[in-house]
Structures are given as structure tokens and as C-alpha cells.
Amino acid sequence: MRLFSPSTRSKGFTLIELLVVVSIISMLSSVILVALQGARDKGRVGAGLKFATYNYRAFGADAFATYDFNTTLTSGANTLFPDNSGSNRSLYCSNAATVVTDTPAGVGQSLQSTAAAPCIANSTYGGIWPATISKYTVSAWIKPTVAASGPIVNGTDSGGTSRIFNMYLFTSGSNLVLQCGHKGQNNSDNWFDSDGKKALKIGAWNQVSCSWDGTTARMYIDGILVNQSVIASPPQTSLYNISVNNWAGGYYNGLYVDDVNVYSQALADTQIREMYAQGLKSHPVATR
Image 1 (cartoon, rainbow, N blue to C red):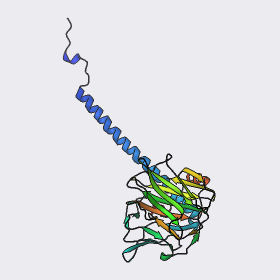
Image 2 (image 1 turned 30 degrees about the vertical axis):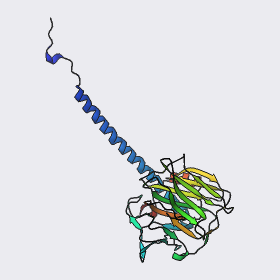
Image 3 (image 1 turned 90 degrees about the vertical axis):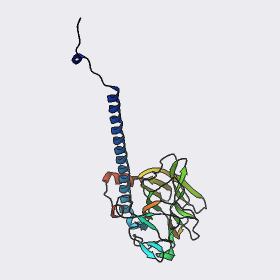
Image 4 (image 1 turned 90 degrees about the horizontal axis):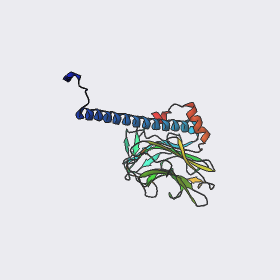
């Protein structure tokens, strides 16, 4: 009879060893997934910075008003943000506006909007008003904190209710959706949105833009064209007010806003493709 010594037996893994290996693999997988998600978010923000750069370089001369929130002025208990376009259309926030160091590029300041400090620019606070708008591009960086409806940037008539251009947030199920458009001279509401096409990131920075070239309105999120709509009726021609997180008594509490720009020109798809082909560097407003 052949005897087997302990040294000649085949060795296998114990249950505890297998559980340890599985735990290590799970932990490594979690780390890798978090790293990949972080890389995706950095790439998404990077694309938005390039997009904002292109807007600024292509349309800087046609800027109607720009606000980067890096310079804070006070007027009694209220806050003024200067217009960097040179048009002197300062943004006035009733009560003390809150500025924070949380920005898309990681430097400078952004505006933390609250219902207590709505912001508006009009003839009371500087610049030449009304202004005639025949085409437009409105862009901003936003960081929503919750899924809630509210205004981002609006241009309105003398009564402050008819929206000459509109950038708005609303909820669709659990998603946060961007709405663009304007009220036409025929008194029709011409709104379109990103519902079912691209949702906004909650708790992260998103670059959003709305434009109208005289015929077609386009919507961009993080530099990507996500929807467009033919709008034949032009907007009301006389722009009296620009508001940030403030329209008809509606607000979005806790919305972070940065680099608000209003241009009197519209983006074209070919210009977007050119932007990525050239790989433009971030402009001073975007990178601060």
C-alpha cells in the first residue's frame, strides 16, 4: 500500500482565503470606478471650459454684458458686480450676495444665489438701456445643488415679465432639465428643452448656452449641441433687464453661478467643430 505524506497532498484555497481575495478585488474595482468617474467629470468640465473660451474669443467684441463675480462692490447693504464687457451694465443684488471659491476652474469666485439676494441689471444701475436684440447667445456655468425648478439668466422687457431670452431649469422625474427660448413678437412662447436628450449634473459644474441666429435656436450643455428648434418669430426687440436667478418672483435657492455672458451674436455648429479642432486654451474669464 502506498502512503501519502502531508507534503505530497494537493493544496487548495480555504474559504477564508477566497473571501479575502474577493474583498480585495471588490475594493480595487471601487477605486478604479471612482477614478474613472473623476476623469470623466474632469473631461466634461474641460470641454465646457474650451466651449466658454471659444464663445469669448469669437464674440468678445459683441459682448452685451459679462459677469465673472470676481470683483464685489457694495452699495449700502446691497452688492454690485461690475460688467466686464465694458458696457457698464452692472449687476445689482438686493441684500448681501454670497460669493464662494467653488468655481469650474478652481480659482476665482462664483455667485451662490439665494432668494434673499436676487440680481438684476438695468438702467438704474448703469449702462445704456433699452438695447435692441436681433440675435443672441447666453452662456453660464451653473452648479445645481438639488433637483428643483428656477431661472438661471433671463432678459426681459420694461415690465420685467416678457422674456426676450430665457435660460431656465425644471425637473422631469428625477432629472434636472435645461430650457431655452424666447417670447416672440407675435406674443408666442417659444420654449424647448433638453428633456430626454441630456440631463444636467446635480452637485457638479455644467456649462450651459442658449443661442438664436434669427431662425434657429440651439442649446448646448458642456459644449455639446443637445437640441435645437426653429423659431420664426424674433424676440421682443427692446431689452430692459438682465436677471440672474430672478424672474417674476421665482428663484432657485442655492444655485451656484459663474461666468455669465450675453452676446449679440449666435453660435453655429461649424464654429463648435472648429473649436475642438483647434483645441483652444482657456481664456482669462474661464480660467481666472
